[in-house]
Image (cartoon, rainbow, N blue to C red; front, side):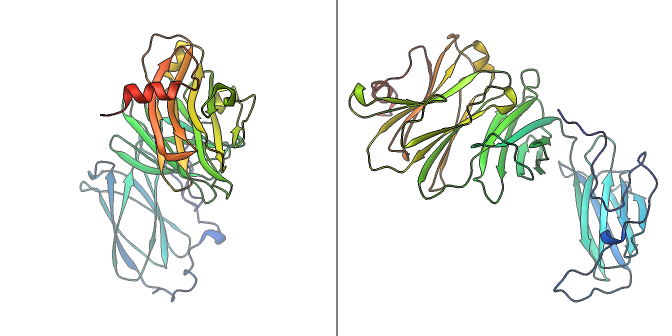
Length: 362
């Protein structure tokens, strides 16, 4: 994986202890009045900066670096109350906060010549990798925003050139994440953080719906596990059955991403709009006990904005078989019936009726 040797800065000419002396920021990074706004006052502003941890507690002895309108760098530390007061001239000051054992914090503060209060939240260091890809092409998605939450931490991160995002995830806690960019749907993920089983997770992000699409089912999992997403399409007789998989797509379905390497742990089936009435069984074929620790996840998105997220069972006695996610009619998410069962026999045209009778609520 691509780990970074030192914290990233916003290239504002700011440096932290051990990475070089403070220098003047390059001219093209020096603050200037925002366009469309009146020029700010040029005399000193008084800034009261509060530094907090992710639990809202003040942090002492945090190194702070801030710029003035000349691009010069000021340096200071927070006091016993987690605050730092300073005077600075100009229209904007760029602030960097550093403390060993935490991610570098940043803040941009607009100055008005008066007293200003601001705060920076310091987050624990990232320790868990997400790999974000296009669900259709399997290619890395760059500059995709990922909003994530784990025990005591809520933050936003951005995928790099490799589609990788490093987040903080406490071992044993649940990690929830949503990945989104202007041309994609908000892709959802939820898993338990178990580094001994998997130190990273895959998140396939579907593109926005076009006029011919109505439903997208996306499979993701963790670790070195071989899974195959399949959809059985049928009507009333076995002659009408057709199975969509990596080998074949049955109209109006289209299969994407027939990949087999762990780094590309994602597959997708898209429902096109059709006048023919079909029923569908959505299921996954697995080949070893590794399936139960892979935290396989099926996210189903509809063009109306609704979403379903189903996680596979974490225990089972069947070494190789089929995970039946659920059944749906005509690609309408309102008709989705969750089964979430592991079985030895591959689903057929009778399977959905069987589980509907045995699992439906009275």
